[in-house]
Amino acid sequence: MGTFPYTLEEPKGPILGLVALQADETVESDFRRLLPPDIRLHVTRVESDPTVTPETLAAMEARLPAAAGLLPRGLRFDAVGYGCTSASAEIGSRRVAAAIARGVETGAVTEPLNALAAAAAALGIRRLAFLSPYIEPVSARLRCALSERGIETPVFGSFEEAEEARVARIDTPSLIAAGRALMAEGGAEGLFLSCTNLRTLDAIAPLEDATGLPVLSSNLVLAWHMARLAGIETRITGAGRLLIQTRQSA
Image 1: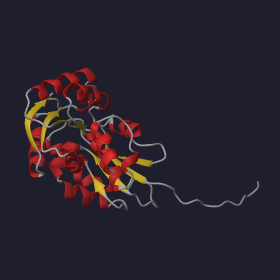
Image 2: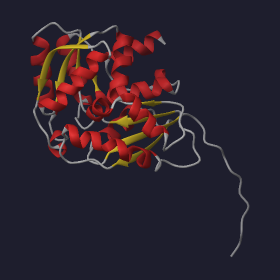
Image 3: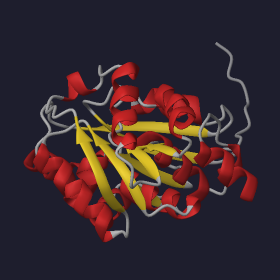
Image 4: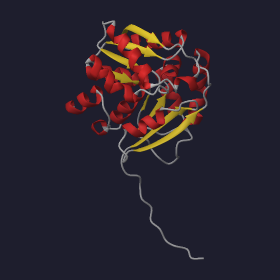
């Protein structure tokens, strides 16, 4: 058997990390669509309950350091995102960031609520129609968390679903119909489709065409914000006013 010499190459380009829920079937594939292939994306999973309640969401906080610690060692990440909108509201953004930072070396931590606040600020939006898949106690905490960030949700609707497996299978026509109905009520400057497990990307362009207003989703704003924190905001791909307008202003 021969032994061969080799040289080592340092990682090139931005490195992003994503902590996805065990129950999430959507966020990872959405990120692969949104981020250019030369951006290195590493994904880990955190144990999550198949049923979404305030209690099951809050329980994830204690598991986040270990989950983040399963990202590749020896790398310093430009940004790490936590892929759960509802748990971010239940646990709190600062506590999420602190928990993830205990498990991985990173320049920044974000999650969908902070990402949405940043996206809304970039678009000059303060009033959003809000579509949630979840039961009322979970949705109510989300709306309160957005209000604390200066974002009003005067128009609200939900699919009132508690099972993650069913949320992941809500189809695009259902999202478009619900989104159009909410926006028809008026009083909002844009629409937010909440939940990283909801398959929203293919609904964004049709809803923007129908309403003439920006449409945001958890996965869209999270990928966008992580890219911005890593200094690569102009290279995120896909449709939507968020990407077009912020790319033009960069």
